[in-house]
Structures are given as C-alpha cells and as structure tokens.
Length: 246
Image (cartoon, rainbow, N blue to C red; front, side, top):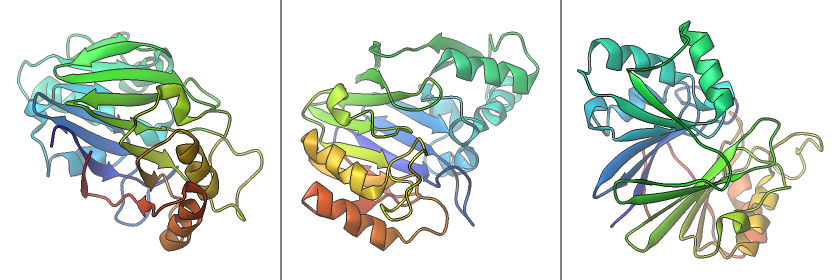
C-alpha cells in the first residue's frame, strides 16, 4: 500500500496506564513522518522506525499532550543521532513553547523549523500535505495527506465548529478525536463526542473512520457503537502500535 499510519499513542489529554498520548507515524514509499510527538510516543516510535530514518516531524498544535516528546528528540538528534538536520513543521505557538521548554532562542541547527498555517500545502517526498485550522482554543491544524491515490486525514483536536469537509472530499481513512460519549460530553469542552465524530465524518463522505483521543478509562466499545450509529457503518477505535493501511 502507498500509505500507512502507525499509532504511537492515542490517549486523550493525558496518558492512561501503559499508554502514550497523541502520535502517529505516517509512512509511504518515500518518507517517514512523525505526526504529533505527545508524551511517550518517542519510545514507541523506535519500535517501528529508527530516529535517523525520520524524514520530518509535523505537530498540529501547542497543547502538551501533542508535542512535548519533541524536547527529547532534540536531545537525541543533538548528541546521538548524527548530524542530520530534521525538518519540523509546526505552528508559531508550538515553536515558542518548544524554545521555552528547551531554554533556547532558536532550535537550529538541530531542527529546521518551518512554520505552518491554515490552508498551507507542502510536499514531504511523495506525501502531499495540506492543513485546515480547527475549532480549538489555540491555533490547531488538522492535516490531510495524499500519496499514491490514497488519502488520510487527522482531526487533531477540535470542537464541532470544524469538519473534515474543510480538507476536501475523497478521504479514505480519517482519524478523529472522540473525547466523550454524547451523555458525558461537556457542552463547553473544545472536543467532540463519538456521535459528533461519526456524523462529521459521514457528512464529509469519509470511507473509513477511526476514533482516537479517548480519555483514559473510557469504554471503547461504547464509543465505537455510538460513532457507528451516526457514521452509518462500523467504526473502529485506534489501538497503540497497530498499523492501519490507507
């Protein structure tokens, strides 16, 4: 297959027992990209890919559960992984947070930081990336990746004011946050329920839907059933270390 997604972590907001927060490895014939570097994902990444074989990092936003392992990666690349300069794509806010955590004014030459914004498009080898700003309190960019005629999209974090429709039709695999069941949903929380995730993906014509970002202790089966009802077909819940073919 042209494109695959490896789940490095999928705990929502904080790490559950034995689980990492948000992170995925996007693999194609020409590139390996670490998408979101949440706590615990760097350890899991190395079961699937040597750090030296990474082609880039993409970070959706500055909330800690989506990026803080980047600080560990900085140390690894600075002292142990050789002289490779790693491209890192992220928001301005994420860069500021990373510099503050590392006590640096600049992340060069270890990281080649490339600022991304909504509606940006870019190529990482054979992967074509585009971004859309979601409905979240800080600048948060949902990516779509196209490669070899297949398409993957990730909601990042969002409330119902955003939809996969803003990334275009023809999404073969969508990975969508589902932080609550509908009964447990907080009206003012900037996240989706499983029912909302399913309805949003259905409206966008998504072919296959995976739920992620479940709060530790959530009933994954109940979440999948709720999303399936609104999506109109079976929905799976992402599992750490599983590889999904797009």
